[in-house]
Amino acid sequence: MTYAKELIAPRPAPKVERRPLTAARIVGMAILALWVLLAIALVGMVIDGWDQQKFLRYGPRYLSGLWTTISLVGLAIILGAVLSLPIAFARMSKNRVANAIAYGYVYVFRSTPLLAQLFLVYYGLGSFRPQLEAVGLWWFFREAWYCGLFSLTLNTAAYQAEILRGAIESVPHGQHEGAAALGLQKWVAFRKIILPQALIVALRPYGNEIILMIKGSAVVAIVTVYDLMGETRYAFSRTFDYQAYLWAAIFYLAIVETLRHIWAALENRLTRHLKR
Amino acid sequence: MSGFFSALTTALDPLCGPVGIFSLLGSDTLVACGDTGWGDEIAFGVKVTITLALATLPVGLVIGFLIALAAQSEEKLLRLAAGIYTTIFRGLPELLTLFIVYYGLQILIQSVLASFGIEQRIEINAFFAGMAALAVVFSSYSSEVLLSAFRAIPRGQYEAGDALGLRRSRTMVLVILPQLIRIALPGLGNLWMILLKDTSYVSIIGLADILRQTGIAARVSKEAFFFYTLACLLYLALALISSVGLGFVERWTRKSGARR
Image (cartoon, rainbow over all chains, first blue to last red):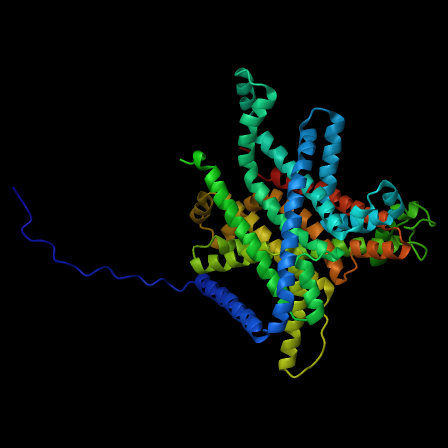
């Protein structure tokens, strides 16, 4: 029987190798340093130009602008979701005419700028004042806020219809056949089998669409709606203080990042049965 | 020779040429070319929009490619720096980015000049400001598209390049880039459409693009509905043309791909 008579003497720990200073590392440091410098410059600018009076005067206006943006986008998303249902179903139907109309709607609203659509609604429809007064719709198209809501809704309905259609069509055909084999009615099968699977696919695009709408809603400031962007432009035109735009940037970044994280958590929660 | 080309482009001008739409509509309409109508002003706006989008595209693509390279490097600092860039510029509204660039550059240049003792009001070119803002936004989106395309290329391709004795840069140009373009093309096509629409924002800082020219025409002639519909139709036409063009490019890149 053999056994070790001598234990291996304890040895020093292996040397920690220093990471070499590669070109990538230097560039990374340089760019990060640039970011830090920029951040310091911006913070310095805010501290340097701090004005209690301006803060008290424009702070509440910013908050009311924030509320306008959020309520505008929230309403537009909900109304757009309602409007997108018939469009999406028309787009999937076998009826040629309905399909063509829905396709035309989606194509037109997705390939023209939101700003042009907004001008068309606000200034274009606004020029039909006598006719609109005769129909009793003038109160709606007179207000910039309603016009903004209207064009945002039409715009997001086109995008949401495409999201919904893509999601429903991504559910495999076998699911429809399986439901039919179980003797389920079409509507029950759609509600209980197709839609839950489709909405999981649609979850991420819907989140992106909400973020796009929040960013896109800034254009309503051009037609005199005092949303977050509108208040920013107001404050800048009064004070000529560049900080106005920085504060708006902070607000928008905060909204978008919060939404992004909420959405990631939501997706994580709703797809937990799909993970292994 | 250049005279011939300019004559050719005038003859084939789809809006105000001899066979242009605005010319065919007649000289007594609102969109007539010349002093009586708004046709030539709007045609100029179309040119500005197309030029701006075409000038932004290569700048945005190059910056986006560099950001994508940084975002997939092994160096943590570089990844962090690229992440900050994309987070900021994908989170800000395009309109706000435009204002920040437009006014920020003016203030920056003025303060630099002031430190040299030159007190002067500087107004920077709206075209340049628009191009810078749109390029920044386009690059942060295109970096994400390119990054996912990079991830779709298997490691074996890099290893094969090494095995053939190609240098890293040669591998990138000869092996990776052709596949990258093919994978990223649909995403980049979408971004091009978005860029084309985003150019409308520069009308707010005073650049004479489609929307600004039609807006002026609408205000002067009081025919707002007609002119804004025309603006939408022009954007629609641009989108149609570019989707046909993108279809060509896509077929062309697919032709060079290996059959599997």
